[in-house]
Length: 300
Image 1 (tube, rainbow, N blue to C red):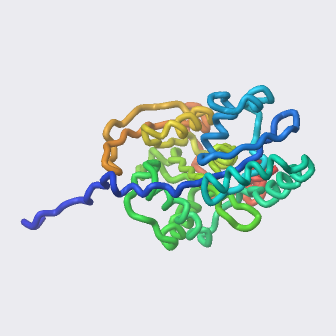
Image 2 (cartoon, one colour):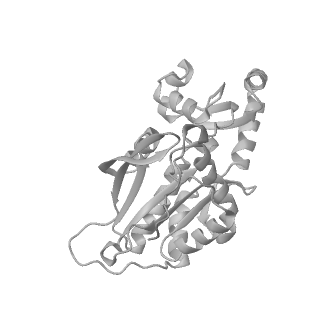
Image 3 (cartoon, helix red, strand yellow):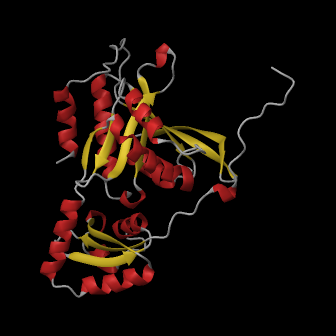
């Protein structure tokens, strides 16, 4: 090492966090009895959760199914004023026209989960970079490029799935993949699972579909454990992993520094297989029929 002072990266300070653009939505919820409830919000995921849990949701949805209500229509507006006007207009529509809105929205936003290709690199990088700029879900500071993610996808597919969730018009709404947990041979049956959903798609069940397919494919390949590393302050992700059957392993204190504060990380573990017998080598390539059998279940 030369006498010249060598240093690592400069820390990410609070002002590096770019505020997420303000949003305003009008929406329709489908209750179990078939009725529709309309409203507006500036945080679609949080509002959906409020309706389903009864904590801050409307009296109507609380008494008409609560946890079973689902999003039937969502429209992004320029601001709160525009959303309030649109909400009032939708509420005045006859039931048939509301149903037509919901039907068209469902068709336009039907999401298909498929295996990624390097051609998806630009879309995946754009989604990932949203979290680089606005969140602590990733500890990365700099933006990824389309070329980097094209190479990332190709590299992942050599040993594990890389799934993308796509709308009929080609919009990426989420992705999930798995990377080797460590490079040493004894770790060969373990992977780290990663999932990101578009901010506007959080809370609509897409994460469950992506993870269900990912975990089933990994099990079929012969992997034994899937690990997830979640930032300590990311309460929604902790709840999600618990619902998916992961168990909390341990907490790593002050593990990363981003946006002007130290952050803990929590390790979650999901047992794909059990047993003490020597494991078979992992199959890095599944047949097309095997992959289709899993993806068909989440694309119904």
